[in-house]
Image (cartoon, rainbow, N blue to C red; front, top):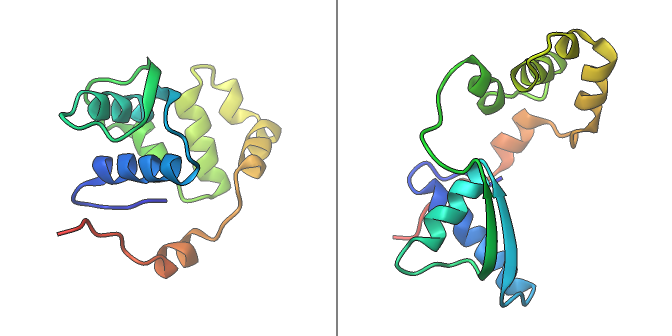
Length: 130
């Protein structure tokens, strides 16, 4: 996870651009949904785009991100079962989904299991180049 509190979007874009470069990808089709779509739009409308985009599809990639209970469930996810229940409640209008213990358990089990606290404390901070 790339964390940069000063220039986060450009850092993520540079990260993907460098990944493409390392794999020898000179041009490719990109699909971006939500934040990924916004990152594509920002990069491709900048004076010097970094991503090797030959064509792109952007899904829901525009506008201000509303800060509310639903978005907080995503931004503040703590890898707990109840945290996953809050995400399921945010993503589905039907309250049957977050109430379904088995469904929430499967969603929770399907994520990559990591110890968030130790990962966060062990990660060196990412700072933008001066």
